[in-house]
Length: 356
Image 1 (cartoon, helix red, strand yellow):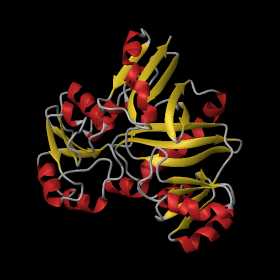
Image 2: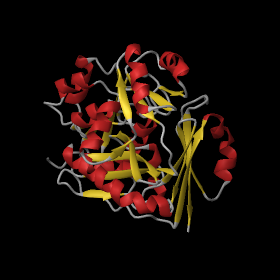
Image 3: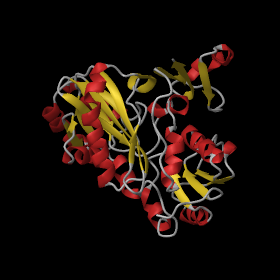
Image 4: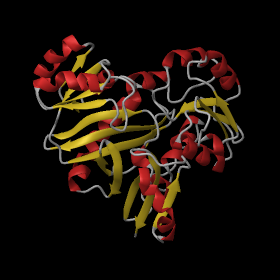
């Protein structure tokens, strides 16, 4: 890889809040960002040098976009892979397409983790309704139906508690190819977030304890506590092995359940992650800056905590309406994404608090 000097253009596929925070970090380092997204109202485009509004499968538009970028990255792992293969020959894509392919397939990512020695919940692949009953017989009840593709923040999922509920669950996820996944007992949820450079250098941030509500991350807090801290090293070994196997460049996240039998792998995200937003104020180098450093082939920054305790709280739906009170809080680092009218289940911003 060749180091990209400040002034180079970084293309970002996706125009949401992650793209916005990446573009802000890049601008502070002297880089230009070019956002590519199908939505006309892109909050990332508001802070970028250039914006292309076109579908992800528009090869002609993607090619023009790529010609104007020195490197391409993404904030959204559900970008179609096939069109990217057309442009990667001329402009490097980091992280690479292989990482996207694995993260887009729930069954594939679990098999990938298993092959590297990770533990996962029991699961079975369901390609059509006829396979569903046998799949649930294998994993047992209660279980979760999860679409193989395009599921996030609790979307594309249905809880199935008994055999009579299989048909309703299948209908709830739209009859798409899915996995049936056994529900597991766990004591906490946590994530391993790492940045990996092209030379193999890896930096880990401390793992936060993550609390979800309705399938959406509500809070990440550090220190994570003895249970998670005792399982962090094993989870990191799996994440590092995955990054090495993928020849990964950039920030990668793996989510885990902390169980009595050790860390249980849940999902992988080949990008910056909501559970790492606390790093903007709570770490020496944020996940966003280190992602830009990695894709531009710069040395990675330190990831140590800047406070004894850090808490990040998502502002979901109407929770962002009390912006006046939030800005009046001396301890609150407030990030509002500028998404307009709040909607239930929609991430409108986040607040980070540092305690020294």
